[in-house]
Image (cartoon, rainbow, N blue to C red):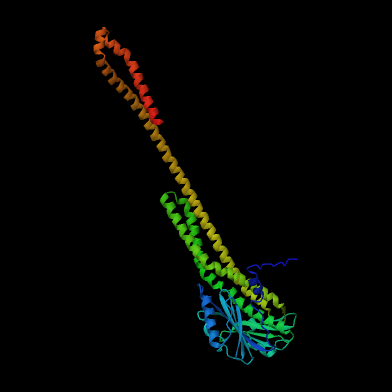
Length: 419
């Protein structure tokens, strides 16, 4: 039996690698985990520059560098275990150490390589080997926004208040005494991602709020312009209205360009956030709100605001296009009416010219016949005298024949030109 060799799909390796692109690091029973989330500038090559800086750091620190396609890279530095993750528009730097590590910005983890990145999120999580959060740890939280819930079927507890401290870190406490090492590690990663995507999902909200007054101004200008369209009766006023509409279209297009990617990314981050919250399998208790409930009450309205602004912008663009279409139709109708009037004028002119031409042809026939008969009278004077014919009578008899002959000759010439 002949051996069969199957050819791999060109993307098979990438698809297989995607499953292991961001592996879960096993977290010890007690540790302190910190994460920084830094957004890169919205320009081409920003992420490549950061990745290049990180490669330079690895070379200087004696760390094995990541591969060109790696999006997650981990290494050990002194008493810390560090993980860098490269996303589409942001970078996370996560490191864990002992519970007594109070250095929020340590050396040796590559922070200098972040370059142009802007801090959008920072969190500190203490993983403890207790079954529940000890009461002595709770006074450090803001009780007005305290979230404290049982997770993973009451095998662990998590507490936070989503409030930043003096060093700009949000504090989390995770009691994971009943969780297996793998579940503990997965829960830690989910909590880190929840805080990461919570901040990234709301990144479009300040932009939406800042752009709302401009959008409202365009909406009011469009309403006033549409109301004035009925008064645009002359070509000048119609053209002015069309130019105003094109100006509004350009402004709304620029706004869509600025907001489109940000809102689309916010929706994607919000969906990931919801999936990560569901993965915690939270249960409420009497001491605080659940993360899902608290975040839902804060993040969902923000995403709804962005979605509402996006829909308003889409409706505005549709209205502008419709108004431009109506004006173009009106301009087209006016042009057809003008063309019809011009054609009617041309037709009338052509008829007048035709009638004038017939008149001229008739007069020409008479004039040519007159001159022809005059020539004939001179030419036939001698022969008529020899024949003793009456000259006047002869010319009178020949006159109709001469006129008919001239008319036929003119008609033949006209047909020759028409052919």
